[in-house]
Length: 314
Image 1 (cartoon, rainbow, N blue to C red):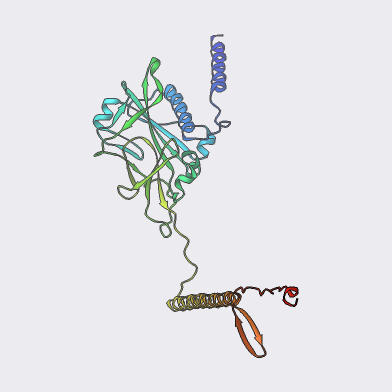
Image 2 (image 1 turned 180 degrees about the vertical axis):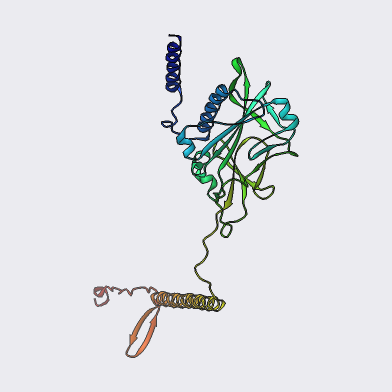
């Protein structure tokens, strides 16, 4: 009887946990923040189920569809003081001594993410990385404080920073690099902010990036320009340049000729206008084959004087 009740209660508990579990299959991941929250929730479930031992690395159990899509996570529980004194190593991430986690009450959990490059649109805007190409998975490192009732993980991420002289190193050697050295330039480090912003800098050494704090990181290369088809000989370059120069000189000469013709035509028109004006001022008449020019001045009209003939002949 007792075993039956126990089996029934266990079945009810499992059914309830499945109903309350987040359904990753129906969850639409549109941003890095959403993905971080999802991984944090599954880390919390693994933490409460397995009771993490301090300093031991655990695999975070994610839904099968996320694992198949190339998303994986690991977590480790550490004491705040030990992290600052000795640092830590969690797969590709190496934290040297001096690491500072704030806030950190007594312990914290470091969560390492590995996200396949086909999820890159979740981490950055397309325009932000138009001049570069991602050639590695995106590796993330986030810290969470353990505290409160029951030792729950805080929903607010802990700010994890490292001194400039001892930065966090991220080794991409074992990561799958989609890199064709014959066509790509030198690999560069990239960090992806929650706002979609991307920062790019030089590697510390081959396949190793240095970072001042937690975040999401990857390796990128500059997008190579498409090479010209075939090689152009110097003779062809000289011929094309000569033709171009000759064409330019011909067009320039046409422009000069057009300007001279236009100036000559304008001078002719001015001369014709000047002559027309003079001929209008001086009346021009033809007497036989002789051209006579008369002034157009006015003269006084003659008047006829009238005499009184009756007085004179009377």
